[in-house]
Image 1: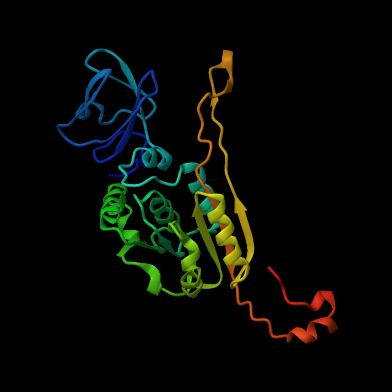
Image 2: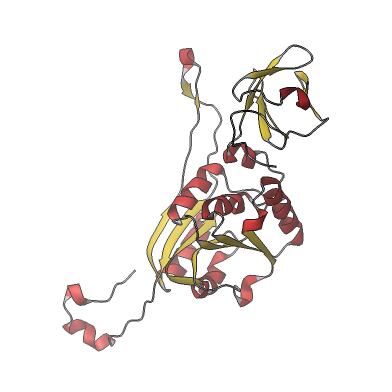
Length: 282
């Protein structure tokens, strides 16, 4: 699978077909294959060389637009063994982790590989992602999804319980998507370089409080906790309004920076220190 880089359909491209009812079909264009839909079928050989943004006709005469898919489109269609982090959160996570070309990033909790694919895309050819997952079934699915996207060479998948720590050190960013992330903050700090970016995903308020408490008393600074709510709207000009359906809650995002919080002042000396000279407290 490869996302298109040219204006015209070529063999090997992954193409998005969209009919009048906006149902989406993703197919990789291969010789002799066809797309079968509720609107009819399209022979994939027949669309080679067609410009993206035009329509192909099914055998019943129905038109379907041929579009290059975005990573968002692909992630929504990924086969999954677990609930993925939603695209509304994925882009924000990439921003908050400061992801860019050349970075080395650890992910704990590969799941089905949705976040892994974003991390791999952002770090580029000169960066690398180390994805940890203790369940082989989940790891196999993540590997297949990354291979389908053509990004698997940027990722090292590691089947391991991270209780004893990570194999890498001095990485730029680290993300925890685990059942009990507060238990692995020490291991995360050992793997991160000074000033490195930490991200954590938790679904419930009580988990968020637990993680924040551990971060507050650990070697972390600039703590942030956020929830992203996205409300889609109906876009028909004569009746623009909020959609009746939306994702009410997906999870909470927690971010922090790795620091060395060694307080070198004895408690009895604090009373004699000016406010501006006191150690940082959170």
